[in-house]
Amino acid sequence: MKKRILIVDDDAHIRLLLHRTLEELELQGAEIHFAEDGIDGVEKARALHPDLTILDVMMPRMNGIDACREIRKDPELSSVYVIILTARGQTMPPMDPAFGPHEYMTKPFDPDRIVSRAAELLGFEIDMDF
Image 1 (cartoon, rainbow, N blue to C red):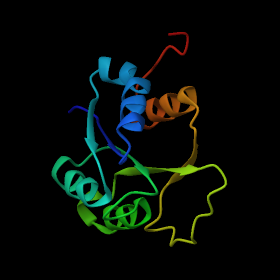
Image 2 (image 1 turned 30 degrees about the horizontal axis):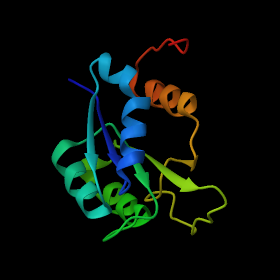
Image 3 (image 1 turned 90 degrees about the vertical axis):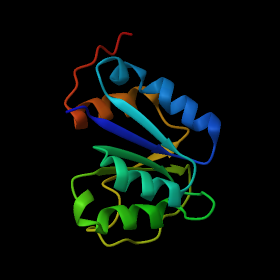
């Protein structure tokens, strides 16, 4: 079964940057899917059952915090690992650990950190000298 990554961000440039950052995993067989806002992200998560979801915080229609909560409280998505991307210095509201993200990363993000973390979570081995 292919590993699936869902990238949810309203900024097309960030989606493209994350896609390029994670290309090595795509070459190893991961599927990368995209959503432009929290509502679309939750719908795609329910349809795709991704292994990893990367959510931006500030998005139209539904923010990343609420999208994370919706994904994490869905019993069918309990195995989805959620990383939330926050702007440097952005304060995050306290969240119930059962429904919050597994991990936070700040923007601008370190491409090496995000690809190595995604590879680790999905069970891929990568050569960081690419």
